[in-house]
Image (cartoon, rainbow, N blue to C red):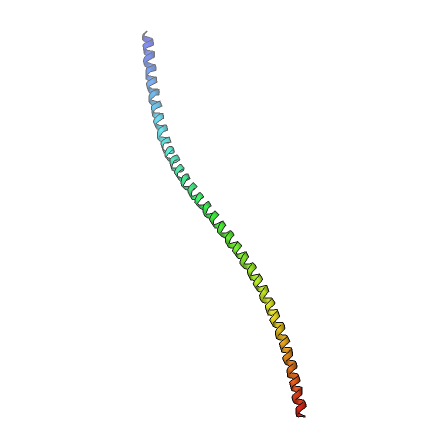
Length: 123
């Protein structure tokens, strides 16, 4: 019986020692992992902020792409209008040049005939 009591006393001491060590390990675990929980919370908040920033940037890119498409379409329309206008102006220029050359030819012919009349009259 005494031996059982001694054994019980020794085992109770070991149980208390293991219980203390277990509590110490639990506290150490909690203290080590407590900052991890804070880190996870910080990273979650940072992730949320970055997600909003990315969504804002995507909206800005979409808006800029829309604006770019509109400007590009307007540029194409303007270029086409300028080409059409240049064609009309070139045709007008060509017509005016033909008229000028025709009138100049008539004037030159008229001058020659007047000159020949003056020469004939002065002889």
